[in-house]
Length: 235
Image 1 (cartoon, one colour):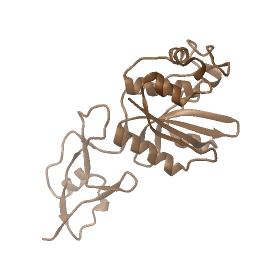
Image 2 (cartoon, one colour):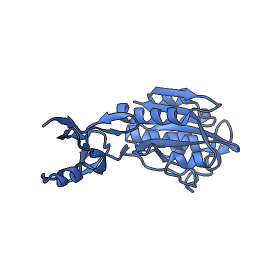
Image 3 (cartoon, helix red, strand yellow):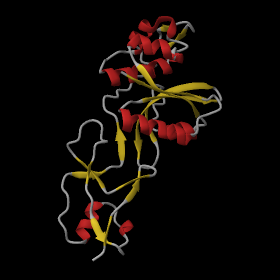
Image 4 (cartoon, helix red, strand yellow):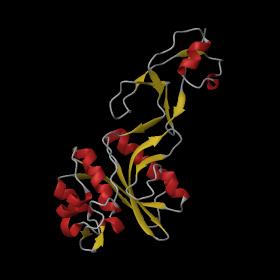
């Protein structure tokens, strides 16, 4: 019998065999165990939702304790709210704006710092450490102050395409296990969030320091925002 390898197009153009994640995976669900199944060359495998559906149809033993790889997120991402009463009235220099009113970038950086350095800083402590570099946020001073490197630095005030933004986040997660600071513009100003995952349907999972607490980048796109900055810090 002629056979062929089952291939499914997943993750926006990356062709892979059926990919299985065992349940006892670490925080970052990227390192998947891969199984390759051979089927009849003339069989239409698109009718099967997952590998177990195919195995059951052909009377074969199913795989226990697995799920299809549908989304990827980084661990150690803990949301901080810029309007938290513990620091919302703290003033950032040199803009003399409060964290609650204008501290989305500072708060997003704090979320990123806590993720990559396993710290438990707050926007208040980072504000104090950065001093006059807190607002407007100085990317280079933040880098040197905390001993980081900047893997990616993109800025286009006219807008970075949704696809470029998505590929940057996916690449940072898959290649470096690093979250991405995402700057956006809209008619009323700017806003920053942290991209720390992606979904099988092409969306970016975000950690939002604002009160609306969106969880997907598409929610901002739908509200009229567009990406204009992308920064990836690393140790």
